[in-house]
Length: 152
Image (cartoon, rainbow, N blue to C red; front, side):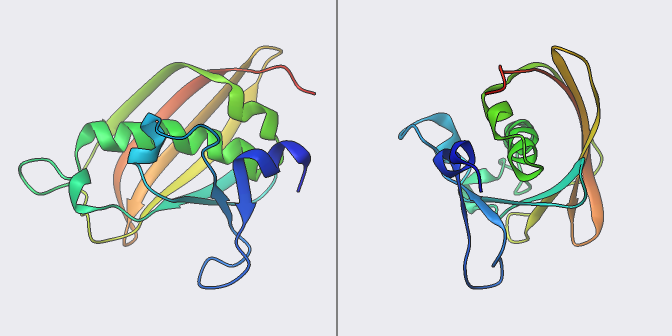
């Protein structure tokens, strides 16, 4: 684990997510703390799996996961992916564009999984897409463009 990765993630050493990275929000009392614990692991050189255990307060008034919550998790999952695939400096990138497509209602009592792919990059931009899945069923999809942070 690189020095930059240590500041924002720690490797889980035991339990069902042993070997995964757990996001460690470096700034307390920020919006991201509302999401809860986020875990990621690489799934190839340009792909990662990011998971979160939703909570009851992530639901809308109809009882399913709130679309704003799903968009916030998607946004953060892109940055968690960059750390998981060995690009921790890009945890400081910024979102230029994010698009969501909602396909089904999500549940607050099942793990939410983001399957994220880095599609390509230029000198200044990263292009990513993901599918949000619960119990093997796609509930949303997203694409995003990130403005790169300077690499160390």
